[in-house]
Length: 145
Length: 240
Image (cartoon, rainbow over the protein chains, first blue to last red):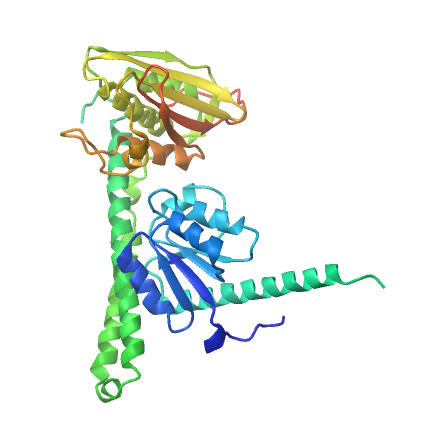
Protein backbone atom coordinates (compact mmCIF):
# COMPACT_ATOMS: atom_id res chain seq x y z
CA UNK A 1 0.00 0.00 0.00
CA UNK A 2 1.31 3.39 -0.95
CA UNK A 3 1.73 5.69 1.99
CA UNK A 4 1.43 9.42 1.70
CA UNK A 5 4.50 11.10 3.17
CA UNK A 6 3.94 12.72 6.53
CA UNK A 7 2.85 16.32 6.28
CA UNK A 8 5.68 18.79 6.33
CA UNK A 9 5.72 22.00 8.32
CA UNK A 10 4.41 23.88 5.31
CA UNK A 11 1.60 21.44 4.55
CA UNK A 12 0.41 20.12 7.88
CA UNK A 13 -2.82 18.23 8.20
CA UNK A 14 -5.82 20.36 9.13
CA UNK A 15 -7.93 19.08 12.03
CA UNK A 16 -11.19 20.48 13.40
CA UNK A 17 -12.01 19.67 17.04
CA UNK A 18 -15.58 20.22 18.27
CA UNK A 19 -16.51 20.13 21.95
CA UNK A 20 -18.81 22.28 24.09
CA UNK A 21 -16.32 22.00 26.98
CA UNK A 22 -13.66 24.71 26.55
CA UNK A 23 -11.25 22.96 28.89
CA UNK A 24 -11.43 19.76 26.86
CA UNK A 25 -10.96 21.73 23.61
CA UNK A 26 -7.79 23.33 24.98
CA UNK A 27 -6.61 19.98 26.28
CA UNK A 28 -7.09 18.11 22.98
CA UNK A 29 -5.64 21.00 21.06
CA UNK A 30 -2.47 20.97 23.21
CA UNK A 31 -2.03 17.24 22.56
CA UNK A 32 -2.45 17.51 18.79
CA UNK A 33 -0.88 20.84 17.96
CA UNK A 34 2.71 19.57 17.68
CA UNK A 35 1.69 17.25 14.84
CA UNK A 36 -1.22 18.92 13.05
CA UNK A 37 -2.88 22.32 12.64
CA UNK A 38 -5.84 22.44 15.01
CA UNK A 39 -8.95 24.59 14.74
CA UNK A 40 -11.42 24.40 17.62
CA UNK A 41 -15.06 25.29 17.94
CA UNK A 42 -17.67 24.89 20.66
CA UNK A 43 -20.82 24.12 18.71
CA UNK A 44 -21.74 21.66 15.94
CA UNK A 45 -23.50 24.48 14.08
CA UNK A 46 -20.30 26.52 14.01
CA UNK A 47 -18.40 23.45 12.86
CA UNK A 48 -20.74 22.98 9.89
CA UNK A 49 -20.30 26.66 8.98
CA UNK A 50 -16.52 26.29 9.15
CA UNK A 51 -16.64 23.20 6.94
CA UNK A 52 -18.38 25.22 4.23
CA UNK A 53 -15.48 27.64 3.95
CA UNK A 54 -12.48 25.52 4.98
CA UNK A 55 -11.19 22.10 4.20
CA UNK A 56 -10.18 19.73 7.01
CA UNK A 57 -8.53 16.32 6.87
CA UNK A 58 -10.15 15.18 10.12
CA UNK A 59 -13.08 16.26 12.30
CA UNK A 60 -12.93 15.16 15.95
CA UNK A 61 -16.20 15.63 17.79
CA UNK A 62 -17.54 15.19 21.29
CA UNK A 63 -20.85 13.27 21.54
CA UNK A 64 -23.01 15.18 24.00
CA UNK A 65 -23.45 18.74 22.81
CA UNK A 66 -26.43 21.10 22.79
CA UNK A 67 -28.36 21.36 19.55
CA UNK A 68 -26.90 18.34 17.82
CA UNK A 69 -25.01 15.31 19.07
CA UNK A 70 -21.60 14.35 17.75
CA UNK A 71 -22.89 11.38 15.73
CA UNK A 72 -25.32 13.61 13.87
CA UNK A 73 -22.55 16.13 13.19
CA UNK A 74 -20.18 13.44 11.88
CA UNK A 75 -22.98 11.94 9.76
CA UNK A 76 -23.50 15.34 8.11
CA UNK A 77 -19.76 15.74 7.62
CA UNK A 78 -19.54 12.28 6.02
CA UNK A 79 -22.42 13.09 3.68
CA UNK A 80 -20.88 16.37 2.52
CA UNK A 81 -19.21 14.63 -0.44
CA UNK A 82 -15.69 15.68 0.52
CA UNK A 83 -13.38 13.03 1.97
CA UNK A 84 -12.98 13.85 5.67
CA UNK A 85 -11.87 11.54 8.47
CA UNK A 86 -14.33 11.42 11.37
CA UNK A 87 -13.50 10.62 14.98
CA UNK A 88 -15.93 10.62 17.88
CA UNK A 89 -14.27 11.42 21.23
CA UNK A 90 -16.57 10.82 24.16
CA UNK A 91 -16.83 10.01 27.84
CA UNK A 92 -20.47 9.01 27.43
CA UNK A 93 -21.77 5.48 26.87
CA UNK A 94 -24.93 6.84 25.26
CA UNK A 95 -23.55 7.03 21.72
CA UNK A 96 -24.00 3.25 21.49
CA UNK A 97 -27.78 3.52 21.68
CA UNK A 98 -28.15 6.41 19.25
CA UNK A 99 -28.00 5.68 15.51
CA UNK A 100 -26.09 3.09 13.57
CA UNK A 101 -23.43 5.32 12.08
CA UNK A 102 -20.00 3.79 11.96
CA UNK A 103 -17.26 6.16 12.98
CA UNK A 104 -14.00 5.68 14.79
CA UNK A 105 -14.55 6.20 18.51
CA UNK A 106 -12.10 7.14 21.24
CA UNK A 107 -13.31 6.94 24.82
CA UNK A 108 -12.22 9.51 27.39
CA UNK A 109 -9.86 9.40 29.19
CA UNK A 110 -7.79 8.27 26.19
CA UNK A 111 -4.09 7.72 25.71
CA UNK A 112 -2.92 10.96 24.00
CA UNK A 113 -0.47 8.99 21.84
CA UNK A 114 -3.40 6.94 20.57
CA UNK A 115 -5.32 10.11 19.70
CA UNK A 116 -2.35 11.43 17.72
CA UNK A 117 -1.92 8.08 15.94
CA UNK A 118 -5.62 7.86 15.02
CA UNK A 119 -5.80 11.45 13.78
CA UNK A 120 -2.65 11.02 11.68
CA UNK A 121 -3.94 7.77 10.20
CA UNK A 122 -7.34 9.26 9.37
CA UNK A 123 -5.68 12.34 7.86
CA UNK A 124 -3.46 10.17 5.64
CA UNK A 125 -6.48 8.21 4.44
CA UNK A 126 -8.27 11.50 3.66
CA UNK A 127 -5.24 12.68 1.72
CA UNK A 128 -5.21 9.45 -0.28
CA UNK A 129 -8.94 9.67 -1.03
CA UNK A 130 -8.48 13.22 -2.26
CA UNK A 131 -5.62 12.14 -4.52
CA UNK A 132 -7.79 9.38 -5.97
CA UNK A 133 -10.60 11.91 -6.58
CA UNK A 134 -8.20 14.20 -8.44
CA UNK A 135 -6.94 11.28 -10.53
CA UNK A 136 -10.47 10.18 -11.40
CA UNK A 137 -11.39 13.71 -12.46
CA UNK A 138 -8.26 13.97 -14.61
CA UNK A 139 -8.96 10.62 -16.31
CA UNK A 140 -12.58 11.58 -17.03
CA UNK A 141 -11.52 14.89 -18.61
CA UNK A 142 -8.88 13.29 -20.79
CA UNK A 143 -9.98 13.44 -24.46
CA UNK A 144 -10.54 10.12 -26.22
CA UNK A 145 -7.99 9.23 -28.83
CA UNK B 1 -40.78 2.81 48.10
CA UNK B 2 -44.41 1.68 48.00
CA UNK B 3 -44.80 -2.08 48.05
CA UNK B 4 -47.88 -1.89 45.85
CA UNK B 5 -46.00 -0.18 43.02
CA UNK B 6 -44.68 -2.87 40.62
CA UNK B 7 -42.68 -0.24 38.68
CA UNK B 8 -40.82 1.07 41.73
CA UNK B 9 -37.79 -1.18 41.25
CA UNK B 10 -37.44 -0.25 37.57
CA UNK B 11 -37.75 3.43 38.54
CA UNK B 12 -35.15 3.22 41.28
CA UNK B 13 -32.75 1.38 38.94
CA UNK B 14 -33.30 4.03 36.26
CA UNK B 15 -32.58 6.90 38.69
CA UNK B 16 -29.40 5.18 39.88
CA UNK B 17 -28.35 4.50 36.28
CA UNK B 18 -28.98 8.11 35.30
CA UNK B 19 -27.06 9.51 38.26
CA UNK B 20 -24.19 7.08 37.63
CA UNK B 21 -24.06 7.85 33.91
CA UNK B 22 -23.99 11.62 34.40
CA UNK B 23 -21.35 11.39 37.13
CA UNK B 24 -19.27 8.93 35.12
CA UNK B 25 -19.39 11.17 32.06
CA UNK B 26 -18.28 14.22 34.04
CA UNK B 27 -15.45 12.34 35.73
CA UNK B 28 -14.22 10.84 32.45
CA UNK B 29 -13.99 14.33 30.98
CA UNK B 30 -11.95 15.53 33.96
CA UNK B 31 -9.71 12.46 33.89
CA UNK B 32 -9.20 13.02 30.17
CA UNK B 33 -8.04 16.58 30.79
CA UNK B 34 -5.62 15.41 33.52
CA UNK B 35 -4.23 12.67 31.26
CA UNK B 36 -3.73 15.15 28.43
CA UNK B 37 -2.10 17.65 30.78
CA UNK B 38 0.35 14.98 32.01
CA UNK B 39 1.19 14.10 28.41
CA UNK B 40 1.71 17.77 27.50
CA UNK B 41 3.91 18.45 30.53
CA UNK B 42 6.00 15.35 29.85
CA UNK B 43 6.47 16.30 26.21
CA UNK B 44 7.45 19.87 27.01
CA UNK B 45 9.68 19.09 30.00
CA UNK B 46 11.42 16.11 28.44
CA UNK B 47 13.19 18.54 26.12
CA UNK B 48 14.69 20.43 29.06
CA UNK B 49 17.81 19.85 31.13
CA UNK B 50 15.74 19.73 34.33
CA UNK B 51 14.01 16.57 33.11
CA UNK B 52 17.28 14.79 32.50
CA UNK B 53 18.73 16.02 35.80
CA UNK B 54 15.86 14.98 38.06
CA UNK B 55 14.29 11.52 37.54
CA UNK B 56 11.49 12.40 39.97
CA UNK B 57 9.82 14.47 37.19
CA UNK B 58 9.40 11.37 35.04
CA UNK B 59 8.18 9.41 38.07
CA UNK B 60 5.58 12.10 38.87
CA UNK B 61 4.26 12.15 35.30
CA UNK B 62 4.08 8.33 35.28
CA UNK B 63 2.23 8.28 38.61
CA UNK B 64 -0.30 10.76 37.26
CA UNK B 65 -0.93 8.57 34.21
CA UNK B 66 -1.22 5.44 36.33
CA UNK B 67 -3.65 7.09 38.76
CA UNK B 68 -5.87 8.27 35.91
CA UNK B 69 -5.89 4.74 34.45
CA UNK B 70 -6.79 3.26 37.87
CA UNK B 71 -9.59 5.80 38.44
CA UNK B 72 -10.99 5.09 34.98
CA UNK B 73 -10.94 1.36 35.66
CA UNK B 74 -12.96 1.95 38.84
CA UNK B 75 -15.46 4.02 36.87
CA UNK B 76 -15.93 1.18 34.42
CA UNK B 77 -16.92 -1.31 37.10
CA UNK B 78 -20.61 -2.07 37.41
CA UNK B 79 -22.43 -3.87 40.16
CA UNK B 80 -24.29 -6.87 38.73
CA UNK B 81 -26.92 -6.50 41.45
CA UNK B 82 -28.14 -3.33 39.69
CA UNK B 83 -28.94 -5.24 36.49
CA UNK B 84 -32.69 -5.74 36.80
CA UNK B 85 -33.56 -5.92 33.09
CA UNK B 86 -35.35 -8.92 31.69
CA UNK B 87 -36.09 -8.40 27.95
CA UNK B 88 -39.04 -10.44 26.68
CA UNK B 89 -41.84 -10.32 24.12
CA UNK B 90 -44.97 -8.57 25.38
CA UNK B 91 -48.08 -6.74 24.23
CA UNK B 92 -47.46 -2.98 24.21
CA UNK B 93 -51.15 -2.32 24.87
CA UNK B 94 -50.88 -4.15 28.21
CA UNK B 95 -47.77 -2.16 29.01
CA UNK B 96 -49.51 1.16 28.24
CA UNK B 97 -52.50 0.17 30.39
CA UNK B 98 -50.17 -0.83 33.22
CA UNK B 99 -48.33 2.51 33.02
CA UNK B 100 -51.61 4.45 33.12
CA UNK B 101 -52.94 2.31 35.98
CA UNK B 102 -49.89 2.95 38.17
CA UNK B 103 -49.41 6.63 37.28
CA UNK B 104 -49.23 8.72 40.47
CA UNK B 105 -51.55 11.60 39.71
CA UNK B 106 -53.98 13.72 41.69
CA UNK B 107 -57.73 13.07 41.67
CA UNK B 108 -58.47 15.94 39.29
CA UNK B 109 -56.47 14.23 36.53
CA UNK B 110 -58.19 11.73 34.25
CA UNK B 111 -56.19 9.37 32.04
CA UNK B 112 -57.72 8.06 28.84
CA UNK B 113 -56.01 5.19 27.00
CA UNK B 114 -56.67 4.05 23.44
CA UNK B 115 -53.96 1.73 22.18
CA UNK B 116 -54.04 -1.16 19.70
CA UNK B 117 -52.23 -4.40 20.58
CA UNK B 118 -48.77 -5.11 19.13
CA UNK B 119 -45.76 -7.06 20.31
CA UNK B 120 -42.34 -5.61 21.13
CA UNK B 121 -39.20 -7.06 22.68
CA UNK B 122 -37.94 -5.15 25.72
CA UNK B 123 -38.12 -5.13 29.50
CA UNK B 124 -41.83 -4.80 30.32
CA UNK B 125 -41.42 -2.98 33.62
CA UNK B 126 -38.79 -0.63 32.25
CA UNK B 127 -40.96 0.43 29.30
CA UNK B 128 -44.05 0.76 31.52
CA UNK B 129 -42.02 2.92 33.90
CA UNK B 130 -40.85 5.10 30.96
CA UNK B 131 -44.45 5.60 29.76
CA UNK B 132 -45.52 6.35 33.32
CA UNK B 133 -42.83 9.05 33.60
CA UNK B 134 -44.28 10.77 30.52
CA UNK B 135 -47.88 10.38 31.73
CA UNK B 136 -47.02 11.86 35.14
CA UNK B 137 -45.15 14.69 33.44
CA UNK B 138 -48.25 15.42 31.34
CA UNK B 139 -50.45 15.38 34.45
CA UNK B 140 -48.13 17.80 36.27
CA UNK B 141 -48.45 20.20 33.33
CA UNK B 142 -52.11 20.66 34.34
CA UNK B 143 -52.06 21.76 38.02
CA UNK B 144 -55.78 22.52 37.91
CA UNK B 145 -56.58 19.05 36.62
CA UNK B 146 -57.59 17.81 33.18
CA UNK B 147 -57.36 14.95 30.76
CA UNK B 148 -54.19 13.08 29.78
CA UNK B 149 -54.66 11.15 26.54
CA UNK B 150 -52.43 8.13 25.91
CA UNK B 151 -52.86 7.02 22.32
CA UNK B 152 -51.13 4.10 20.64
CA UNK B 153 -50.63 3.96 16.88
CA UNK B 154 -48.81 1.66 14.52
CA UNK B 155 -46.75 3.13 11.70
CA UNK B 156 -44.83 0.56 9.65
CA UNK B 157 -42.56 -1.36 11.98
CA UNK B 158 -42.91 1.17 14.78
CA UNK B 159 -45.38 1.53 17.60
CA UNK B 160 -45.90 5.08 18.83
CA UNK B 161 -47.22 5.89 22.27
CA UNK B 162 -48.45 9.50 22.11
CA UNK B 163 -49.07 11.22 25.44
CA UNK B 164 -51.02 14.47 25.11
CA UNK B 165 -51.92 17.04 27.72
CA UNK B 166 -53.84 20.31 27.79
CA UNK B 167 -51.27 22.29 29.75
CA UNK B 168 -49.36 25.37 28.68
CA UNK B 169 -46.96 23.42 26.45
CA UNK B 170 -43.17 23.43 26.26
CA UNK B 171 -41.53 26.38 24.55
CA UNK B 172 -39.62 25.35 21.39
CA UNK B 173 -36.39 26.74 22.86
CA UNK B 174 -36.71 24.42 25.88
CA UNK B 175 -37.45 21.15 24.08
CA UNK B 176 -33.84 20.05 24.24
CA UNK B 177 -33.29 21.29 27.79
CA UNK B 178 -36.21 19.31 29.23
CA UNK B 179 -34.53 16.12 28.04
CA UNK B 180 -31.36 16.85 29.99
CA UNK B 181 -30.81 15.10 33.30
CA UNK B 182 -31.60 17.20 36.38
CA UNK B 183 -33.48 19.84 34.38
CA UNK B 184 -36.68 20.85 36.16
CA UNK B 185 -38.80 23.90 36.86
CA UNK B 186 -40.82 22.12 39.56
CA UNK B 187 -39.94 22.34 43.23
CA UNK B 188 -39.21 18.95 44.80
CA UNK B 189 -38.59 17.20 41.46
CA UNK B 190 -35.34 15.62 40.29
CA UNK B 191 -35.83 16.50 36.63
CA UNK B 192 -35.15 12.98 35.39
CA UNK B 193 -38.52 11.72 34.10
CA UNK B 194 -38.28 12.59 30.39
CA UNK B 195 -34.56 11.92 30.40
CA UNK B 196 -35.11 8.41 31.76
CA UNK B 197 -37.98 7.78 29.31
CA UNK B 198 -35.74 8.78 26.42
CA UNK B 199 -32.91 6.55 27.60
CA UNK B 200 -35.22 3.56 27.93
CA UNK B 201 -36.77 3.80 24.46
CA UNK B 202 -33.38 4.47 22.85
CA UNK B 203 -32.08 1.32 24.51
CA UNK B 204 -34.69 -0.67 22.55
CA UNK B 205 -34.18 1.13 19.23
CA UNK B 206 -36.89 3.75 19.75
CA UNK B 207 -37.05 7.53 20.08
CA UNK B 208 -38.67 10.19 22.22
CA UNK B 209 -39.93 13.30 20.45
CA UNK B 210 -41.65 16.40 21.79
CA UNK B 211 -44.24 18.38 19.87
CA UNK B 212 -47.44 20.35 20.31
CA UNK B 213 -50.65 18.70 21.40
CA UNK B 214 -53.75 19.59 19.36
CA UNK B 215 -55.38 20.13 22.76
CA UNK B 216 -53.12 23.09 23.49
CA UNK B 217 -50.38 21.47 25.57
CA UNK B 218 -47.54 19.10 24.85
CA UNK B 219 -47.35 15.91 22.81
CA UNK B 220 -44.61 13.50 23.89
CA UNK B 221 -44.26 10.53 21.59
CA UNK B 222 -42.36 7.36 22.48
CA UNK B 223 -41.60 4.92 19.66
CA UNK B 224 -40.81 1.24 20.02
CA UNK B 225 -39.88 -1.36 17.44
CA UNK B 226 -42.59 -3.90 16.72
CA UNK B 227 -41.29 -7.45 17.03
CA UNK B 228 -42.47 -10.36 14.88
CA UNK B 229 -45.80 -11.72 16.01
CA UNK B 230 -45.45 -14.56 18.46
CA UNK B 231 -48.07 -17.00 19.61
CA UNK B 232 -46.36 -17.65 22.93
CA UNK B 233 -46.48 -14.12 24.34
CA UNK B 234 -47.25 -14.51 28.00
CA UNK B 235 -48.02 -12.05 30.72
CA UNK B 236 -44.79 -11.01 32.40
CA UNK B 237 -44.50 -11.73 36.12
CA UNK B 238 -46.23 -9.24 38.37
CA UNK B 239 -49.78 -10.49 38.43
CA UNK B 240 -51.29 -8.38 35.67
